[in-house]
Image 1 (cartoon, one colour):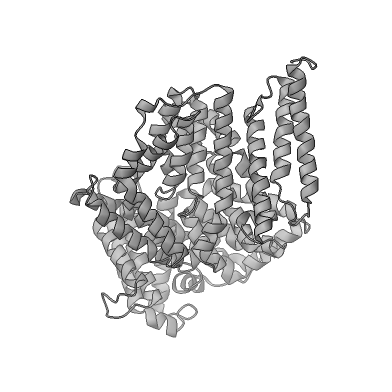
Image 2: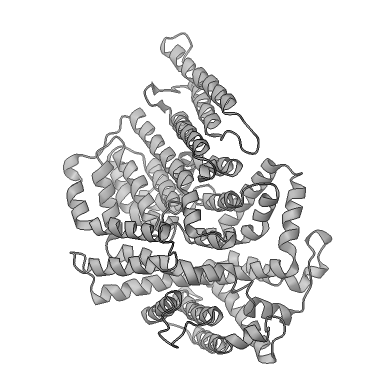
Length: 630
């Protein structure tokens, strides 16, 4: 595995940096994609055996498949120029058709192993769609094609297997995966966790605040929410338990924090890179747009935890049990320095493809002069771990690419977008609710990236046709695809945290859903008014962000029953009305002024004030015993 990963990495570096190591000139992108995909597919069949009993050896049939992959993709790479010049995408020789059909089957199996049966079933049905599209009912009918034409379009064209998804992986995502794994193996994880403990551990509810801070930082190096939970959870959850948090609450905090970590710039999940390719913008554009929504989410978590700790009088950890901030920084300063260099190269120099490789090289070199010096064995383990992550993502993206190709070649992508707008009755809010539910459901059975790619083809054009901002529409889809990680009955991140906290999975799921409540609303706010994505004039952005911060604080107070500067609210059944009023007040204030529905700031502030006065008034009257406690 380490050898194959090293080969793939050298191939990527040669192409991205245009070094000409192997052939004295930069390869055609098509030839590079054939070679890198072939290597990745072989790694998929090594990493994900067909049965659990085959974990320690490679069965003969997998060896046959891997040999076939090597032969087929070498043939395609050798003939890359002919494939383009002779338009094999439309008229291929017999051997090209046969190899394309075999490759199609291999991609389906690779998708099953890397992503599970849901992805296999969905991709199987939809990749075959062009073969029966002309026989479908009018609403979902498309252009029909014989199976051999579909096969060469999928495998030899530029809109299916080698479309946006795999292109993004090969040219952008590859380097960031390498950087993330390098951070883990050089000690970046323990550094960020210790840094968070030193900074916040002694504060009120400090252990839970540490989970938020460390998970936000760890999101850049983990493979996703579940990996994040299993990395930071074993440290943060026991610390939360020691300071008085219940098991369910601790698991919910960790699940929410780990899910949000993938949405936090500067390095987000693979979905953000694919989004940039779909929109034809730089990754930095997507990352900058994600700053305010992700900060609002973590700010909401922070305020809820602070309110919960204040309400229940939970203190922080003793200072003598916490690491020294100075010592932590002295030992791991270079992790922050590398992040600064990476951010500078991304934002100022705009070198998105090369920046992570340079940052990784700098990190590995500096690390060798510290106490975390890496041995050769550990380096090889790091390379192998990188390969496993790459193989999983490449297998899924290759399979999802077939769906994109099917919708493109049949003309269904545009048709479905128009049909969705029609079904919504030209009502944008209805369309958004439909989109949110669809994103959530697909997020249950597929990875976030896979669900996003499918919806970017089908749903995003409908949202854009309805008058919504393209970037906001794509971001909306990504956010709602993430929500399945903290929403029962699925809530995979919460269930992973529950196993660490040794608590009921459903209890952890409901706590995570309550704690992460603000994230269910944030996508609606920024899609209706992109000022929260830092689009527009400075005055409008400042006004909307400022009111959103106050609104999120009020929502958090209502959910947890403690208003900063006022004290406890909602002691009984009547008090629940008080808490509800405070939450509604916050919701009114978070709703952006202007935007598609044209709510004026004056009206929103008036609604906020009315409900806030009502909520506080009920509590004050109860305190003075002018209202009964029920």
